[in-house]
Length: 306
Length: 273
Ligand SMILES: Nc1ncnc2c1ncn2[C@@H]1O[C@H](COP(=O)(O)OP(=O)(O)O)[C@@H](O)[C@H]1O
Ligand SMILES: [Mg+2]
Image 1 (tube, each protein chain N blue to C red):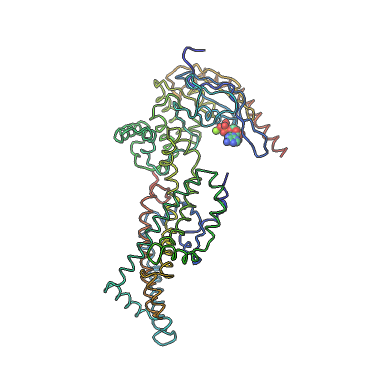
Image 2: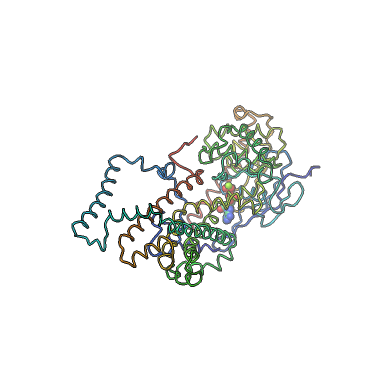
């Protein structure tokens, strides 16, 4: 029995906390969350249901912070050399968008993110399945997986730059090392945690091993993987941007690094703004996908027929 | 020995489980159980006596430590392909709709999709779930999930049905309804049913024969009690008939002994530990 892999993991973190600055996934298999009515039915529109008071205060906070920043730089308390200025950042973002210079970089970053996500997820799924079904393999590989996962990813970036060059593939490789472990641990857990009676029932109905995988193990693993999708997507983006930052000729990370090199604080902040908006949009997309694919899950707030 | 082989025959079946201390725990010992085709046989016994273990052996899910399992005269190898198994726990796939769950066995047998859907809908109607084809299992009540499980196990038209306390989690009214429906389904189907329950009432009113297991460990067959009540039966009336009460009293005095033994043993282990 090699439950060691499963047991060695820390308790699950919540979605948001995952993209931590150490750039080392702590591989929490995110347990399919307990029914959470607020997330389920209208995660995308949840803010619509926030009370007017809260919404007003939220707006006030945001506007206040930006206005304060603007004001403090205007009167000279904060040095615009180090802090730039919201109005300048806004103008820069506007320029980038209207002249279109940023789109190429954005496209590259998104492409890297996508590739890292797909390749990392595919590898994680495959290896997770293999190890969950072949106990001996899991037992043998257990220490090595822990060691590999313990390697801080940033130190790998130079190696990948040497191996894969300055183009997108070094960033993809970097992202893959982040995404892989999240998906791997979740798949492993998803397959191992399938209830015995579901397996027995499906076998009694005549299922072969491959039919078992298709009807029972894969859907169970997918549940876990989708609940960790936010984490995976976050890691894929981190991989792309950090990779670009450390060495590249294109991408948002590259734009930020360039701006930093010329002490162009406005450019750095504008890059951060663009990146944040992209991440937000991707998050919304992930929410939709997740809601669609996991709609079979118990959801206390919803139509209980009985 | 009848002309026809038994649908299920356990001979000298013993099942031991390894324990943490290293010595084996003998759940059931030297069980002989023969069920003729088309018979409805209930297995009764105190909790933990090994009823599920018996069914698992008959299903081929768990090979016996000693003894043999024969299905229609053939020694059982691997899973029992002529049997459906309705588990004590919920076994519907949570990620499949009720219709997809009910037709899972057909899908596994590669029945074409339209034929599958047609049969599935017919079965859903039959078990009173016609309106819930698209629902997911978590949206159903416990009783409805059991109905779906009945449809799921019957749709593949098995010769043998192994049912492990299928209705024990239901409230009394729902349980009676389901028992009635089960009898209606079974009547004329010529299917062999092995029905596990700890409810003597249920066992007698449904079955042709009640088999009583002794308290575990080392559980054995205490005896088989034929139930010669006329069929078709109305479960409401039958429980008030004098014949029913005769049989009930006879089995109950034996069952009570076993339940008491089981209590005493548990009390002793508690004191020892
Ligand atoms: N897989 C197993 N490993 C160890 N002990 C088991 C296992 N399955 C059943 N047992 C033990 O065997 C005995 C009979 O179990 P079971 O057949 O489930 O009883 P019942 O269904 O009558 O309640 C119980 O004491 C139980 O603890
Ligand atoms: Mg049981």
